[in-house]
Amino acid sequence: MRILVIGGLGCVGTPLVNELRIRGHDVWVADKPHDHDQKYIRCDISKFRQVEKLFEQDFDYVYNLGAEFGRYNGEDFYEILWESNAIGMKNIIRLQEQKKFKLIFTSSSEVYGDYKGKMKESVLMDHPIRQLNDYAISKWVNEQQIMNSADRFGTESVRIRLFNTYGPGEYYSAYRSVICLFVHRALKGLPYTVYLNHHRTSTFITDTVRTMANIIDNFKAGEVYNICGEEYHDIKMLSDMILDEVDIDDSNVKYIKEEDHNTLDKKGDNTKAKRDLGHKATVGLSEGIKRTIEWQKKEYGIK
Image (cartoon, rainbow, N blue to C red; front, side, top):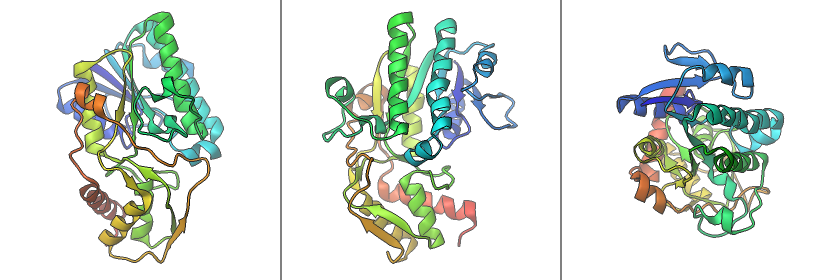
């Protein structure tokens, strides 16, 4: 298959490209920076002219991972987030309506917002949900754009909702995932905050990517899947595991009950992904955290 991965230089996109190429697909990459890959096309998806040029050639499948990531990032740089996430998605959909490629869109568990129960894919259609930040809203807007296009123009898409994917390949910044942040700050002896009442269902990067690549083999237009791990945990548990592995105490950790405008509990249901996509959570939290710590030590030259 001829496949395009938009956002293919990111921490999920890079291993996804590698996995698809290992499986024998002809994989092209699009992202914002310059890159040396011979099958790379530089493109800012918020610019329609650039998206038109990107699709001068044909693809069977397109993965859209191109987005501004994270709640704080979305609040601090909201104009960039909306241009990239919402307008960028609309530009891709316009080309999908013309070219008829199959689309896999990477959404987020953030779309479940203030829902309190176990997060099945049908929740958003069955219950009134309030997304709690711009990043979450933009992901749900994109899902609705995809569904509307399918109804009006017959476009074929699959949506996937990632639950706290983490692991090697995620470089530190103040806007990255919670495990990346905790690991980096623990290794550097920097302070960080733990919100005690928050729970997650984290997924190791290799498990996420393998399941994403499997979509090509069982593409069901209109479907939506949760991709999450099996271990439902609180945030303090993550911090404690990291501190134990790094072998330091919690003197630099500040504990607060909960964080405003953030989902308290993300308890994902991955039954559909297991059934249709062969999803398996093969790397548990303990092993995944160890691998993440070792990778960051190597990348940042930390003894």
